[in-house]
Length: 105
Image (cartoon, rainbow, N blue to C red):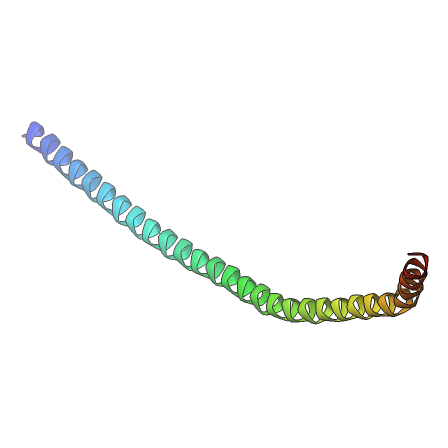
């Protein structure tokens, strides 16, 4: 009978061990799910912050592009006006050179 009592104690101990292992597995699974959920949320927040930053850069870039275009047009217009002034200034000299050349021939 003593052996039956020991066997009974061993069976109870084995059941408790199995229950403890099962509870640990369930707790581990729950923790993994929670960690995955938190990681997914952090990834989504990071993606959203990158998207917001990208959209700001696009908006700023389009503004910068417009300003750059305006600046380029102004610089081009100044260069054209400078060239026209040089042409008018030099045209008198060119005319004199041509007249002198024609008189010599």
